Image 1 (cartoon, rainbow, N blue to C red):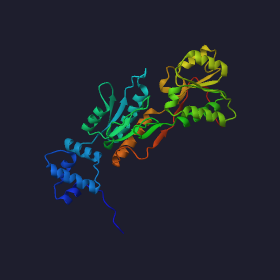
Image 2: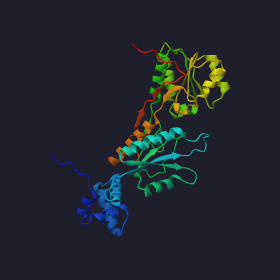
Image 3: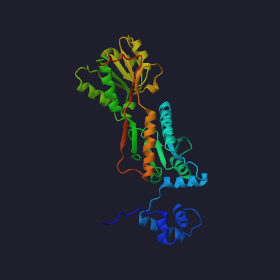
Image 4: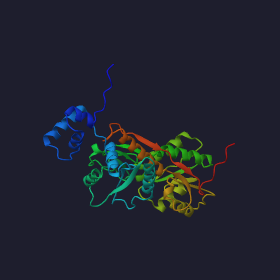
Length: 346
């Protein structure tokens, strides 16, 4: 039986080349005073042997040398884009993502630092900052518009995007399972006695999740004969007048939306919440008054993203993945005063 090939190391390269492991290490890292001809010889031998530097192991050894054996705390980067086109900057959802990521990073012996790409900092400049800091693990925070991170030198990084879709470049993703969550909340509302659910959503919010909320809503209507069909209200901008026209015409008995100002609009149109009508938030982080709805679990999303990035680093999997994968986390239902509670099952 042919023995399994072993992964080449700096020491095995040094033995094969008749050099010290320090010389080989400095040549591969571009450090120290190594003769240029020797550098080329070492790099050629490394390529032929299939050597790949493990940045996590290198960072561990570097930190151990500095701390003389102290506990290692590797650094990961949480990258955020400032989008001037948006009136509402990234806020509580991003903060919760980072909080969850930081807590999990500490548990695994790492530190998560936030880097914001704002005026004066280009992607290539950020790339040089990350490389100078020895950072190879990256968590990309959600963007309202399709982000473009292609100018990062991805051969140096393992990354996860904390939203549904990224194409520049295509990376692994961690996100809320919007489709499953919508199906679950509609099932719960039906158990609470509601039969005419209505969905009021901004087009941009539905589009950026590839219409998963809307698709689940339509599918639920088609597959549950107990539910009366109320057409979705999809708008470019939220306006009370548009909502009241739809609400009075189609008479939903419970409304699902991201924003709790809809409760005021319902009451202005004659509803009494929760006596005559219900309201469920699609993201309770945005509520400005008590209500029932979905917790999209941003802290859990941040924790899962950090775990996946660290796992890639431990396997030395850097660069854009050949097969990007998506990990989804279902939202949790949060009880509140705007929805009747379902009767207890006996």
